Image (cartoon, rainbow, N blue to C red):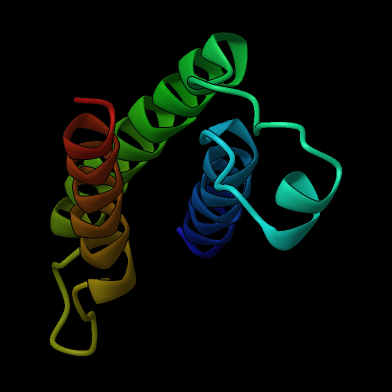
Length: 102
């Protein structure tokens, strides 16, 4: 479960960085200085890849939650809250992407 959690969080961080690259550019001082506008619109290929990565994070989270619940048979076993956090964070990123793309 530890490797599953680390891999899922790594994918989510990669998705967030890719989302930053895929987002439309904002106008800066250099765009105005050289009389060039920023590139309009999203990079659709990267945006689709981010959706896939976020979906994979949600699947990893669901598998991790199911595995964590099934392993709780002893008193010393504890629920893996980091996997639940991964699921909530990936839902948050997916919601943010949906709201930004309108």
